[in-house]
Length: 165
Image 1 (tube, helix red, strand yellow):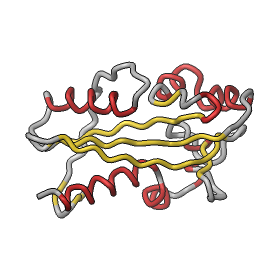
Image 2 (cartoon, rainbow, N blue to C red; image 1 turned 90 degrees about the horizontal axis):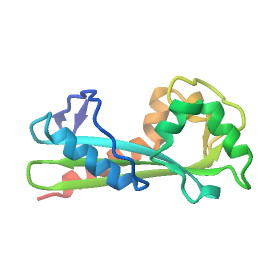
Image 3 (spheres, rainbow, N blue to C red; image 1 turned 120 degrees about the vertical axis):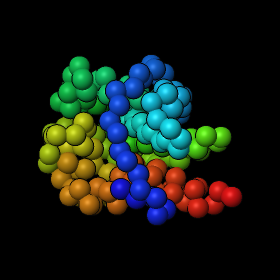
Image 4 (cartoon, rainbow, N blue to C red; image 1 turned 30 degrees about the vertical axis):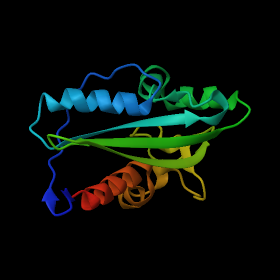
């Protein structure tokens, strides 16, 4: 992949993930852990799914909720709440050897009772972005790359890097 004319290599690392309610805190800790494995610059990301009716829970704990209960468990939990409104968030953190930059992307939406589309990736089939008639699970890869919380965060990081002296 490319960012600002620079080739980016994606490496899957099983980084330790601290248990914290703050997505920024989790992402910063992941960046610190990744710095031990890679020369600079290095970037990491983390995502959360924040339910309005639960004050933002599960947030960054969504990974563990899905590992325990799956998307159907997430949906069942939401159906018992006063609202199914949710926000998908992603924070990208980048270190260049001196400075840490953070960029965030968020998308408001709703968690559905029934999955629609591919259930291969986390909660995609249950999350319906505001203003869309299709869940992330129903979108093509290219469509999701244009509209998702992750895409927004990476685009913001790209803009930060172009502004950096």
